Each structure stands twice: as structure tokens, then as C-alpha cells.
Length: 96
Image (cartoon, rainbow, N blue to C red; front, side, top):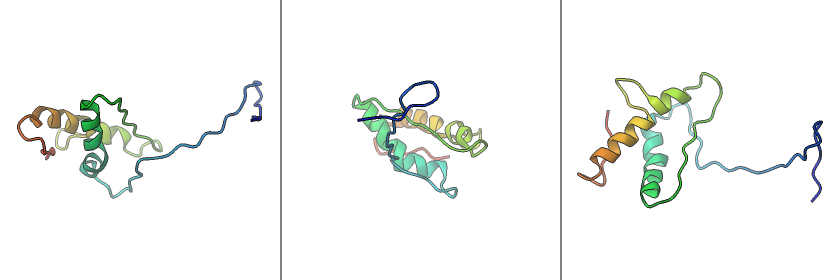
């Protein structure tokens, strides 16, 4: 395969990336947790390497989604809550 070269004489490799899911601006942190993160936690507990990435435009809410607030936990807080209460009820999902 022949790759085009950039100004630094480095090959430009074109790769295709896929998304597990793209959420709309109406989606809540709880939606994201239930639809995507919960399964990833279970995979991680089974020994699978897992990465959760919040990607988006500046000021689009990535940090808020991950960290949350005192009133409403973000993804990180929900994961911690889930892991603490999981032994009591394997089906538990964090509530605010």
C-alpha cells in the first residue's frame, strides 16, 4: 500500500474508527451509564481492558458528564456507587 506523505516526510495513514454509540444533547448521564458504561464495568470485572472516552467540542459538557456535580453524580461517581453496592444487588443501577 502506498501512503501519501505530509510536509515532515511522515506517511499519512488513514484509519477508520467506529463508535459504540453517539448520544444526542437530550441524553442524560444516567442514559449513558445504563446504555454503555454498565456493560463496560461488567467486562472490566471479567478482566477485559476498558476505556471510556468523552469526546466533543469545547464546552460541550465532557467534564460534567464524567465528574458530575454534588447534586447529580457523573459517570465516575456512578461507577463508584455501582461497585460499592454491586455485592448487595448485582442488578443495582445508581440513582441520584
